[in-house]
Each structure stands twice: as structure tokens, then as C-alpha cells.
Length: 235
Length: 107
Image (cartoon, rainbow over all chains, first blue to last red; front, top):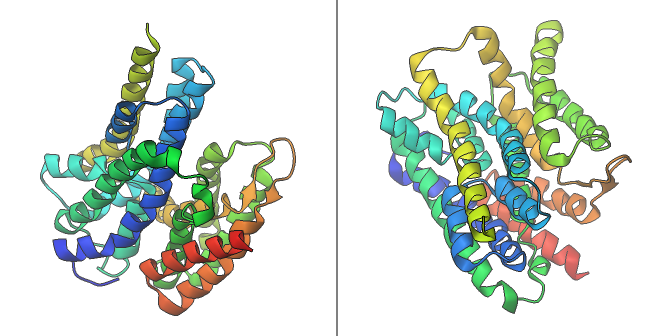
């Protein structure tokens, strides 16, 4: 990752995200189609709901005839972690124009958030619209195209899983966790490693009681204050 | 209400919820600043969320019981992590990850 904050750098640095969205969004298209979504509904779904986890919830809950308010509630709970991410990344931009803030916020995802926070480690914690927006648009376009392609071509592919594409997103988080620990100088490296270990334990035991989608939010709400306490007591 | 309308309303409603969760913090933080305590809390968000997203994929959930190891994803994580340490390049890491899982499924 470079120190530059120009549009070209943004386009280049977002390539891994674009690449990894192909697999997951193609899969969403296939799943939507097999659950009775028409091509146009899949297109609407990806245009309006730019969040893979929320799309999965909509498809799954509509298929099981869940009441609409329950679907909204689930969508809100899954999005709650994005509120935390948005709060975390927004102060790095000193962007005076409201519409630019709205544009950037609209296309924030787990992955573009993680990219931006990694980038902040290399730029003295400053981020710009010129860099970030060009990094956000290609993944959005890829999501729309890939889910449309998935809904269209899905029926001809016997076993899309065998290609290993669904691992792309996980691989990216592995890379981002490593790069984050490697580059973030504001938190002691041993503390970061300790926290990662604790998160592993929380996820493992939390899975007994809490549905995985919600668990990520719960672990974040427990892990962050724990990090603050550990930092003040031991580091 | 037809099932098409029902689906449409669900999509639009969830879209609005999704959009507002991302955009409101950007708008609000233009008007106000966060206290140092909140900022310190938020400084831990990246590492905690990123590792939580990774680890939640290493297990298969079975509510009421301990989760099972997702062996495929665990095994594929090893070469992926090694490639991260060696290359420090996301595109390389993603490629190694996909190829690793495809090979594991082939065997």
C-alpha cells in the first residue's frame, strides 16, 4: 500500500476487492435465482441493498415467509456493525462538502472500510475523497454485474462451489488482519495479537448462543472496550 | 399485496436501513466531534471486526452446541496467511486463497 491519495492509486488499491467480490456476488445471484427472484429483482436488490449479508437475509427470510418487520429488524442488526465502521472511518476525512460525504458513506462496505483503515496507517491517518471514492465505485459495479451474471448463468453451472471463489473474501480478511497488525503503530503489536486471540475465543464460544451474523457485532461491542481496558492496565 | 410488491417493499425498506447506517455517521460527524474515550474505543474496531469476520468463517454454527471446525476454510487459511506474510500484497493473498481452497476441494 502506498502513501499516495490520488484517484489512480485508489483504483489500483481496490482491485483485490473487485476481484474478491466477483465470487461472492455471483453466488448471491445464483442463490437469489434459485429462490425465485427474477433477473430484474436481483438487479434491484443489488442496486438498492449494497451489503451482501443483508441480501442473504432478504433472500433467505423471504423464502421462509418471514414477516416484513422481522426482516427489517434483522437488516438493522446486521447493519449495526457498519454504523461502527462508518463512525470509525468518517473522522479521517476532512471533507467539507456534504454531498461528497454522502457519496462516500453510501458505498462503504466491510471491505472498503478495511482498505481505508489500512491506508490510514500509511498516510498519517489522513484520507481523501479523491482517493476513496474511486476505490469504492468499482466494487459496487462489480457487485451489480456479478450478481446479475449469477442470476442469469447460475442454472448452467453445476457446482460453482468447486471453484473456491467463496474463499476470496475470507482470504482478503486474512490479508487485512495481517496488514493491519503489521502497519498500525497506534496500538502495541502484542496487544493486537492478544486481542485477535481473544476474538477467536469469543467467536468459538459465542457461536453456541448467538447467530453468526449478530455475533460479529456482539464480539465487537465486547472486544473494543476490552482492548481499551487492557491498553490502560498492561500496555 | 402481491408477492412481487411484498418483495419490492422489503428490498426498498432494507435498502433504506442499509444506506442510512452508512451515511448518517458521515453526516453527523461533520457537525460534531467524538470524545477521546469514544475515539479510543473506535480505534479497536478495525482489528476486532476484521478478525471476527475471518474467524466466523472457520466454524460451522450449530446453535446450542459448540461449533464444528470448517476444515476446508481452516486448511486454506494456512497458505493464505503465509502468502500474506511473504507478499504483503492483497491481490496475491486473494489469489493464493482461492487456489488453495479449490485444490483442497479437488483432493
